[in-house]
Image (cartoon, rainbow, N blue to C red; front, side, top):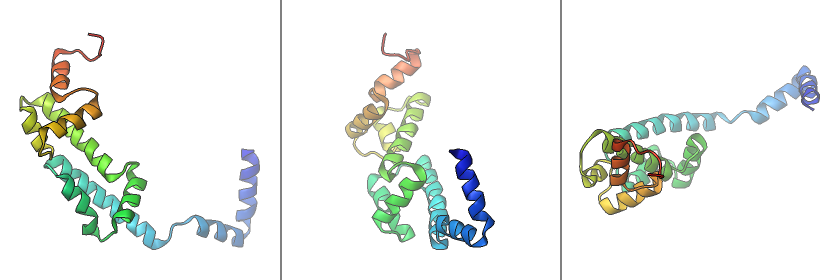
Length: 152
């Protein structure tokens, strides 16, 4: 089957008209390529901002306006490039940052929550439990004692 498809594509590309039609059909318009490039740069900047300082959900929900995209267009391009909806992507980023703070510091859970952009420590704990399968305190204790499985 693969040999048949390769032979067919070679035969089509032997004709200049066929090759032009195939490449034009599969090439994204220039404006779309520019949007994707702009979105990639923007995602990198957003990733760095969230990694360096706490960012609230309200700010995350407004970022699409800074690049003058509608929310739905921003959401679609973001998901196309990262594989995740913006909110899920940044929740995962914040949970990774929280895990690092829990492992590397003795900060109280409330301070870890604040440093990860959460005003409510209880909400943060629920999100962390959903992400890691245990509370922030249990996560810190389990890693520090070396108990990495649930059997103990």
